[in-house]
Image 1 (cartoon, one colour):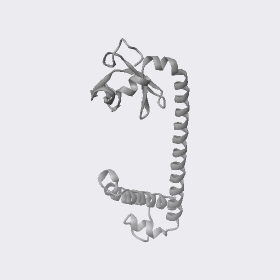
Image 2 (cartoon, rainbow, N blue to C red):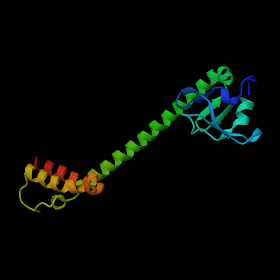
Image 3 (cartoon, rainbow, N blue to C red):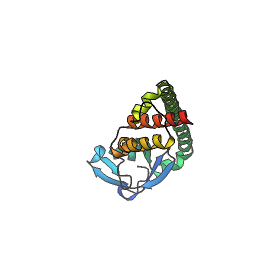
Length: 182
């Protein structure tokens, strides 16, 4: 420990999450064991941080735990510029990973929607009429198509315990039949 007059149980420690840019102070909460084998947890609201070696924290002035660094105030004062720079780099890297994942998922969704549209447009009109329980021949009106859709969509909607794929198929059938009469 860097401050010989204070003990771990009456001093505040700095907790730093560089990836999120969160800085706070916290006390040590629960401590188990004795001597060099003491395991500690932080006090509320950071009581999920632990167990970590209290001996190591006292000896080095800092300890890394998951995304956080717990350290003495002196360690923070000496190293805060580097810790903040490292935190900015970690945030930028996390944002780049999230952006890349978002773009990958968006591209997959666009590809899936394009494939679905291409596949469904290849179906004959009678297929869509059957999906909506409409007669396979004869003229259709907007009112007839929308009414048939509403009746089936209420049961097929995922919020009503229905199947998402069925609901999507009904919606596409409605849209394509409405487009064909427009």
